[in-house]
Length: 197
Image 1 (tube, rainbow, N blue to C red):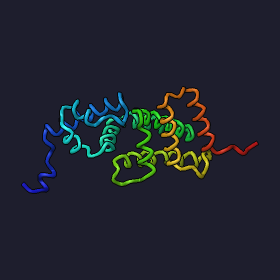
Image 2 (image 1 turned 90 degrees about the horizontal axis):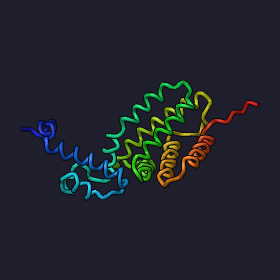
Image 3 (image 1 turned 90 degrees about the vertical axis):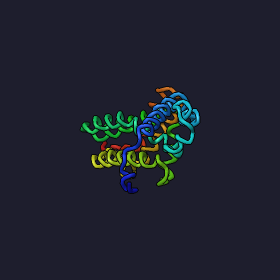
Image 4 (image 1 turned 180 degrees about the vertical axis):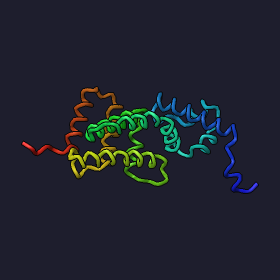
């Protein structure tokens, strides 16, 4: 069998089973213990050795990116609903809340996402999902700018980091009332001021 045929082969059943067990167990550990959970404990509970975990997911970021991919369906569904809104400013606001909730899925998640977004390291597995979310945010920002509702200087990356920041603060146990005031402060910073008087 040629190397090309081997590359085109479907992974063995045990390899697929191990990967699925690792993803399921990692998601449970991330939910219970946050993104800093012990990867050795994940491997042990999944019934595999650490070597198997690292063959599938060479870094914590690779495992986290794979788990986030399995959880992205809800965000995609929210985006489809948001895209139906007529008001681009409302669509942007709803998208920021959807991202904030997505970033709040696991304790400590905003930190590696903000690091990946800032560093733009091509070999960091979290860079691609961050780029996708920043690009989507840019589209909402541009639509709201065209409608005269968002300042021309605002960029999608700015609001991606703002949503990460709110999610991080939310993870510290801050009360919802304070979070709402923080969201209002952020919105007053990116919204275009109405100069008509």
